[in-house]
Length: 113
Image (cartoon, rainbow, N blue to C red; front, side, top):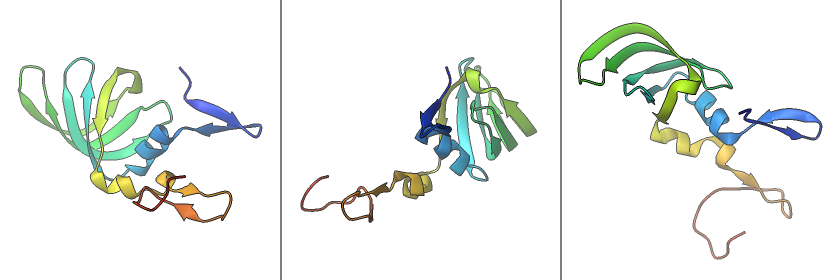
């Protein structure tokens, strides 16, 4: 399934894919549909979720642990990813209020928009 949307005649990627791109150069964990778990630095991510990881610790289905210099993970085989908490502050989570033209976050306030 394609994860792009058409906006104003051009293609754009969704927030989950943008978030994965923001995680580049951070340490992430990836669990595969086959049961292996990879933890390492995200070197590059593609729009189809293919990922290149460096300095990887792989935990096999049987619990065995291996250290690998580089791993390429196919996006279609990913079950889930664990990204750093710091990405909660990524700019894509800010909304622009059309009435005022200011950025709004998820903060607590008097009213909700």
